[in-house]
Image (cartoon, rainbow, N blue to C red; front, side):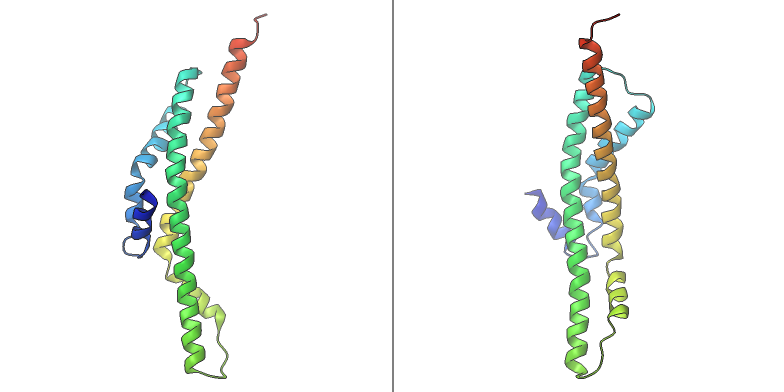
Length: 150
């Protein structure tokens, strides 16, 4: 199962960027559509149907990859923070734990996760928007073909 492979890559900040390689094919689909859209995609219902199918598949893979990276980022950040808090409290009884500094340090520990998540997230949002646009185009072409002429 692909999600388990992605989780293994997301286990470590050293390997999380390899997830971008795993979704490269999906990035290519979205990029290819963007180029076609810039060239004014025809009102051909078959082309629209094909692109909806391709983008729908890409969206599914990208959304899963995004969720895996987001989960790993959050878990790594929280684990670091609570480890620091536990160790400080254990080694310094009665002293106040400075959460703000430790939260910032925890955030700094997940920079690569954040970078990968943001790139995938941008593609997820783009794909969603493109699907919505294509659905509108499809609806318009169906209406144009079924509406009697003047």
